[in-house]
Structures are given as structure tokens and as C-alpha cells.
Amino acid sequence: MTGLVLIDDHWHPGAIPRKGLTGLGDFDWIDDGQEWTVERMHRYQFLVLVKANQINSENTDPWADDTTGDAFDSYVRWGGGLLVIHSGVSGYEKIPSMRGLPAGAFASHPPQCSVTVEPLAGHPMCEGVQPFTEIDEHYFMHFDDPAADVFLHSRSDHGIQPAGWTRQVGRGRVCVLTPGHNLEVWLNPDFQRLLRNSLAWVSA
Image 1 (tube, rainbow, N blue to C red):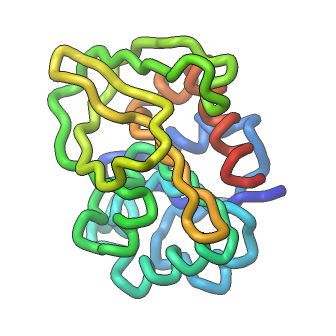
Image 2: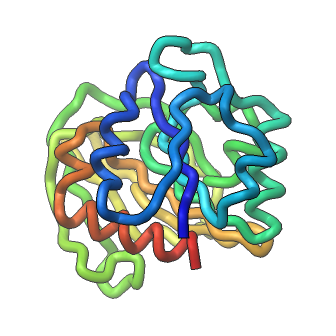
């Protein structure tokens, strides 16, 4: 099964998720947001969004708008899977449908610091995952759905935040992971297990 991965913006080079997802599945990639189309999206059973709302690293104009968000929403409601990682929650806060799918949006982060990722013991999304600490951007979130199934928290000297959750949206599935600014996070063995579990869940 092949998934479509949207990557690359000014703050988050596409090379990082490309390396971080190596060996975790078969993927096709979109670096330039203008290459996304509704028709292309529907060729895939699941999507991975690791891209702030910028066309690419060299063009910071937005690639997504309300029409894009409505297409994403329809895709998921009819049974598609969506995994949103780190930068995928950034820049969409004023697009209700794009913000609505992950039920949250990036609000702010302090300077990069030691962030401890804490899995919820016994949760199936955290199978094989132990707490780990890496230097990362500690994302503080606008969190819109108190009924979302939170399975992960992030902790630093700046506070505690929800860092991973799942939602059923219509017939589809949405999973969000907020860690992941630096390659060291992506390559951490426990984050790799989180990625595997999350990919398996959204593509089921």
C-alpha cells in the first residue's frame, strides 16, 4: 500500500521526513503544494501531511485554502486516512476544514529545548514505545476536541501539551503527532515505533 506524503516548507525541509519515513512504507511525495490535486489525492488510501501552509521552502505563499480543506475533509469522511505530523498543523488555523480534521492548530513554541515525549501506558498506539527526550520545538497547540483520544504528551520546562491523538471523522481516521522538527526526533527508535503504529492505524 502506498501513501501520499506532502512535505517541505520554509521552516521544515522535506529531506527530514523523507529520511525519517525511510523503511516505514511505500510513499509518493509532493514537495510543491501546487502539485496537489483532488484527483491525485484520491489515488491513495492514506495521506501524510508534514507541510506547513506554504507552497515549498522557497515560496512561502499558501498552498491550501478553504477549497483544499473541503477536499481533505471529504476525502477523510469517505474513508481516507490522514496522519498529520509536526508542521502539518502549522498555518492552517484560519482554514476551518483543515483545522477541523486534526481538531487543532499550532499556536506557538519556545526556543528549541529538551522535550520529553510521554506515551500513555497500555494504549495500542503506544505499543512498544518508551518515553524519550530529544531537542525539539515544543509545540503548544490550539486543541479543539476534548473528546479526541490523546495517547501522547510532550513535556519541557515550558509546560505539558497533548502531543498525539486520534479521531474518527466519518468513515475515515485522523492521527496527529506534534513532535518532529529535527531529524534526531524522527530517527529516535521510539518515535519510529510511533510512526509505524500511526501509519498502520490510519491505513487500516
